[in-house]
Image 1 (cartoon, rainbow, N blue to C red):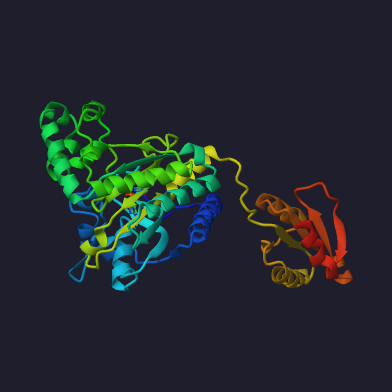
Image 2 (cartoon, rainbow, N blue to C red):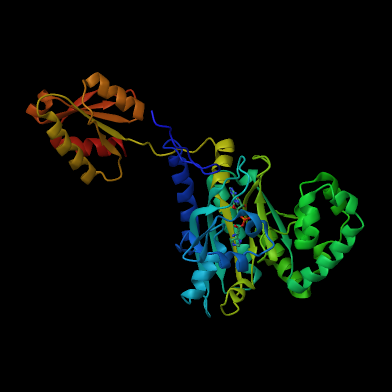
Length: 426
Ligand code: HAM
């Protein structure tokens, strides 16, 4: 036998037994986004590498070491590692944001060359939202209310907590960066225990706040706080957001160490985190990026958004919500045997699909006796088997057999079958 080829590390197949849950989750997400008046955009999976360098930031982990990049006709192209930069690129290119408000959503695969582990993959899926043209904290609040509603629908509301912070504007972060670096210079011995953080002291000091190294975390508890450096406008914006959330009964933790790993943020940043998934506990993250549109060549336009990781959401739901009723793969299984009966079964199945489009109707097509066909119907979890033999064809009848309940098997006229099935699936 030839050697089988396997999927690339960190890139997963979604099996037929998993897709019903994925489809259900995606449907809840899409319904929630649309119920707030957001419209979907679809943009390419490959973009110019420069978009991410300029958008996400040269000194971020994503751009430094996680991009899947290739060169074609001397042009450097990258599989999108996230959705915001592409969304902003498209919005500028097509004039969607010039002097306009936009509420957009997207869903699809993203690619990052990270070390795979539970909840962290090289191809993963995000559903995200971007609001353009609104600078008020009301837009930030709307995003949080929307996600809280979605968690409710997904049955994970009490498994996730909201972490919030404000990182102010560029000037604020510049001053804060100086203060943080000065503070860390006095703790170089501890910093050296975490090579990533030691490197970031030069490239991206604020990301050191994200360290997983416990000794360094303890040192950072005494570090200057970004909040104390905030300008008046950022502070007012943040206070307004907190007031709305308080009024709406949304609880949150202010996490002064929350800075996010992408460079485009300013003012509000937030993450929804869970303790149920181990190390990869952030299921949804986002914030404001008022400078990004201009930075990517558009007219200055405020922006705010988030993205959620679908693999993490599905894992969390599988872990904590066992009450979901997913649709059956097959409602009705059409069984037939005898001379010329299969042809009649095709006619019956097609008639039912036209009359009852909401039902999933599968016809047995691989031959064999009734016993084998019933076995197949059971295996598929069908609710009802419709049985057609030579006797039924001659009498223009069909047998209805209830496979899940206790109801007696009945023979009905084919003229009454739609009415019979309608009442059984009411
Ligand atoms: P991010 O924090 O890089 O933000 O990713 C958002 C979410 O995507 C994470 O919280 C996580 O759930 C999921 N995720 C990220 N990387 C992986 C991975 N390797 N495997 C599985 N899931 C992952 C962004 O991407 C921003 N574009 C969010 C945003 C939108 N900010 C404003 N608008």
